[in-house]
Length: 249
Image 1: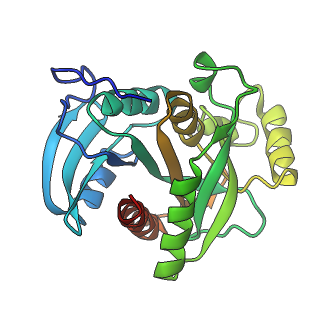
Image 2: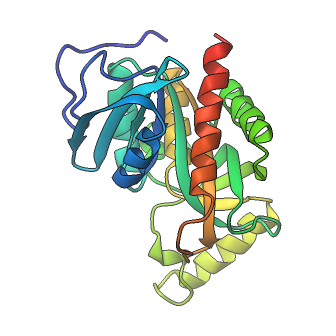
C-alpha cells in the first residue's frame, strides 16, 4: 500500500517526513527508547512529545529509528499511524510481558507471531473476526536473530489487554471472571500477557505495513521483577532482526 507523506510535523509524535527510517522499534517506555538508541551509531534525538520519544541512527550503516509508544493500544496506534506518514513501514514492538505459559520463565524472551485482541483500540479499526498477526518475514527475522545470538526464546501467541491492575486477584468486581479468563488463555497455549501487540499488528495489517513483536518476560501475570530481566536480550533480538530484514531487501 502506498504511504501518504505529509509536509509538516505530526501532531502527537512531533516527527516529520524523512526524520525516521523505514524500520522503527517500538518500546513503550521513553527511557527504553533512549536505551535502545545508545546501541545505534550516530543516534540523534528527533522529538520528545508526550509519551512519544523518537531517535534515529544507524546500525551497520543502515538507518533505523526507535519511538516510544507509551502504555496501551490507543497511543501505540497513534505512533504507528503517524510514523507511517513520515515514511516508516516496518514496526517491531520491543516490550515487556507477564508469563502465562507453563514453560515461560522470568528472563525468557517471547516472539509473538499473533495476539489475542482483548484490547479495545483494534476493535475500532476492524471486527474481532480479523486476526492480529505479525508479518511472517519480520517474525522469521526475529527468530533467526534470537538463534544467531544464542538467546532463549519462545514463539507463539500473546494476549493484549487494557487494564494492568485488573489482573490482581480480588482487586476489581470482575476479578473472578479475569482469573477464569487467564486459565482459559493458558489452556489455549497463550504464552504471555502484554498491552500493545494486538493493536500494532492490527493497525499495521489493515494498512499493508509490516510488524512484529519481541517481549522480555519480567514476571508472572500482574507482578514485576526488578531489575527487568531479558530487556537487553529483547533489544538485541530486535536490532538483529532489522539487520536481517535490511540485508534481505
